[in-house]
Length: 254
Image (tube, rainbow, N blue to C red):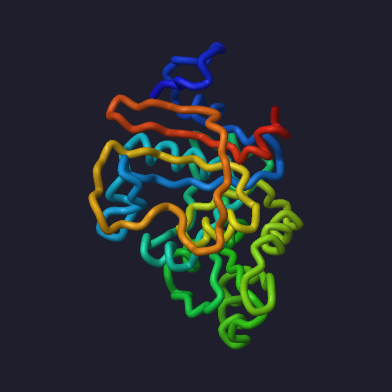
């Protein structure tokens, strides 16, 4: 894997190991929300309902590094269920990248309805210091919230629907300021509509998925938002790993 943008500097064109990837994807500041998705060359977000059909070994390496760098992983409950999420795992070889933080980032599920499988690995196997979090709203069922609170840290943000800005603020209050959103498309759309997305990390798979599959973003209220391409990493198998900043963040970061 080689960085091809930016075109200048010592790292341009250099082979990247895991620590090189960590440097390439370093957070530009403490408070930052990035989203990570994989998409086909024709814009599909999944094959047969799952993103794994578009992935590759290098995509999994980038996925893992983004998790190591994050304070918390934000994901919609439906995506976590469909993709059979488990707690993020400790990476002993990369422990130096998490000095001063928990060994692995907690998963934070976003759900209005609750109704989660509280006996699943995502709750049962999470380390105490990286306990799974559930972000919901006041309109959710109080009994389900109480049951969920037995196995997860519950955050109530918003009244009738989850207030994502309030949720991100609460995560920051807990010291979790480097947020990685892993989807799904609805959550990404809601975060974008709320102006909360600072960065998109997009893995482009050299695959034509054909008609039928949805895109990485959904929802009818997210307006178009210009992005600036900050970096491209090319893999030998044809994958491109693109890093985009929202233009307002690009101006602030420059």
